Length: 231
View 1 (tube, rainbow, N blue to C red):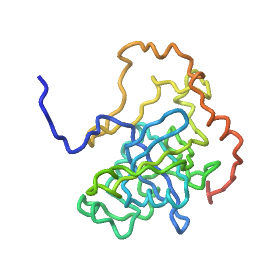
View 2 (cartoon, rainbow, N blue to C red):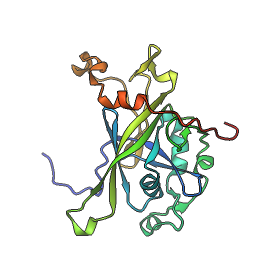
View 3 (cartoon, rainbow, N blue to C red):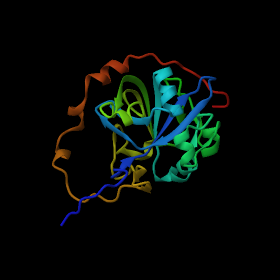
View 4 (cartoon, rainbow, N blue to C red):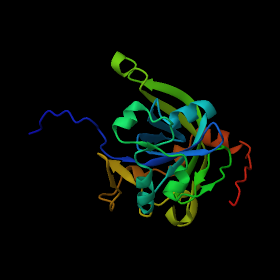
């Protein structure tokens, strides 16, 4: 028998994403989050409207999505309850957040240049996705008490960088789900994927049949060839 419930959050298990963005002064911000999903080469992320990452994406219209594996959990945890905003927004103050300017240094991540965006990649993360802002969708606009608090971004992926250790038989265009162990957030706790529990009927469909027009469009984008000192 089910019971009626009112949990404050509905985080049933979503991948952790560490978002790189560029601040107004050219420095880099780094923020972990886990409200994200993908369709084709589009990604939807949800962020607080007051966050530094939100402000940076709205200003620069780009970002870098780093997907950590279980191996980076300690580094991701170091970024928890930190913000690039100064002063710290009231809502985050209540939760115990503190302002940190050097997020890459705090986490021990190494910034490396991206190809089509100014935001850097975190070299230690096995998956790195360069993304451009395609659309902005406010959340909760139907409820006055929630208006202006949450924003979702539709992002178009422009470049995908994968570590060879997670590839299927060294195929550069296919990730092996038995090797890829994403960091997953479930009700504020860290988890990852376990063993396959059942053969999938959908797996009989070749992945190539899911290609979208975006892949052909972004392939022709020029590289910006930015170089970081000591990179």
